[in-house]
Length: 483
Image 1: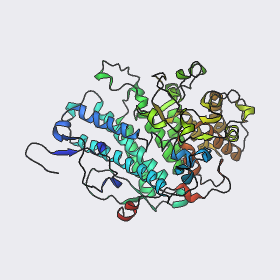
Image 2: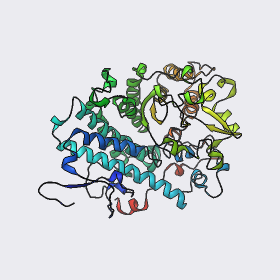
Image 3: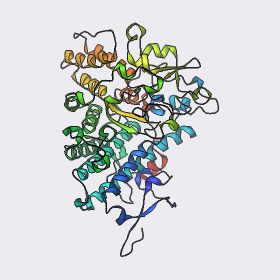
Image 4: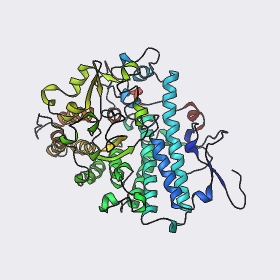
């Protein structure tokens, strides 16, 4: 970068179209936006804008706008009947079978990696500038909250890269190289770290984020209006808030086999469940455009995604039949939601759509007329998952309490069959597996659940599932240079 006595020029990677592996392999491009760095970061608004840009990047179809939720990752979770996928474009069919050498599949996978590390690059830039900033330019708790969100998001994205591109702990081992954990904004190669080091770095970022976000309005209950700092701290469930930190910690610790730690983190969220109230039938009835399909009241962390309609078009919209439908069969529907116990299950009653005799998982469906309070929402962590994590962590320790946690979700959903507190550990594990399949459709979490447990018997997959297919291939440039 060129310097003079007054300004330094800054290229914002967020607005450039290229893929940046490990945030370090630079190529010559002409950026759309070049701003004066010192001027941009001389005001709090610059930090807010860069953080907002990261959230926008996360809504990209290559990331949480499609592929890491209802797209590729749910394809790998074996939800869909892909026989309807057009013959000219069978990318998902090939991916479902683990054909990661296919050019189109490889492009899809590489885009996930590149866009994720692009977002991480911008988070590292933000964190670097926060360290250099004059804290007096920030209002109230904004410095801590912006920094806490950035650290939490860095952990969140790295964790999903670990879950996608590295073997699970039971297969890879703690010392095997996995992914780069990039913590600095600098033009240098970041080596791939060991599994244990990545987990340690994630938890370290989360520990800092938890401290910084302790005065999050979602925690303190402070009322924030649009007159307060232009409403900056409103809608905290659509930002990486204090409880999102705790929920992600629960995910990470369970993934790492630390059930005691996962239970502690999950129960921190469960103890304040009133902040994440169960969706009610009244929010699911009425006209099709006035249904809270994603259960927004239950969000611990979600995205406001203004391009959601574009991202779902041709996949789960009414036009899907003529494009690239992600449909399920009647057999799959009945396997996920057994009719004998699911007549009143709100997940089957309100979230399943029939279009031209095809069945769709309708959690993310919306139209241009959808109620603005529910539109453009993408759930990333919801309160039911904490109950599942707590239940799994208690298996063999307090089976009755594990069952009680599962029953909280099942009762809230309207499942008629009650679970006996005397269920065996094996039976509890089986019920948890069924609940993940019911609850996590269109959110990508079923695949991660199956991978964590290295399941070879995967519902929706015929025969024994090859556990090697759980690990997406690293980009070739990363294998070559990311030592």
